[in-house]
Amino acid sequence: MAIVAPKHKFLFALTLVFAIGLHMAVAGDADILSDFTVPPNTTADAKFFTFTGMRVLVGAPPPPSFKVLKASMAEFPALNGQSVSYAVLEYPAGSVNPLHTHPRASELLFLIDGSLDVGFVDTTNKIFTQTLQAGDLFMFPKGLVHYQYNQDAQKPAFAISAFGSASAGTVSIPTTVFNTSIYDGILAKSFKTDVVTIRKLEAGLAH
Image 1 (cartoon, one colour):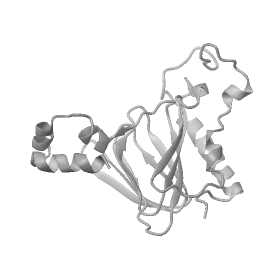
Image 2: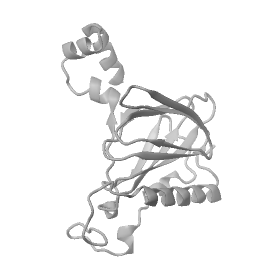
Image 3: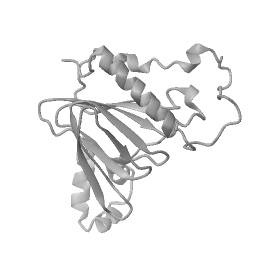
Image 4: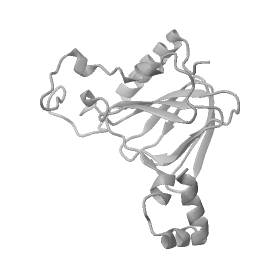
């Protein structure tokens, strides 16, 4: 069974999130002094303003693990200076989008299908959690650690996120902490554990 909703539902979702994204585009990126920015040796025609990378989603089966398909400045250069980008998120049954942050933008997630447990932690270490149903939206403030989890063991979930930057950035907490050559002794002291435990965590991430 395809994870993508029926065509009319999918198009409605894209339209709604597009409108949301436009409202989010307030000083997320530096202002430009022209209508748009075109890279060198690039022609500014209608194709330049069109992104077709999401076509692979239509009618596709659920992925075997959590998957993100992005439309940011890196994939869609026309977004440069426009303070908006998107991501399509696919959550197979029981999968998680691990703890991460977006350092340059807030995120507005629109759940199209399935259910998700979501949450973020603020700078006072207070956690905000919610269980979302299809049709719900949830806002993750800029730069704060957050996650999404599909706890349903049978059904996948499907969401679209809008960001108030053409390049929101993603910092994965597990990868940043345990897979960037930080000295194991520092990690052990930071987490009040031993090096053996740290190396087990690192090994787990490597698989």
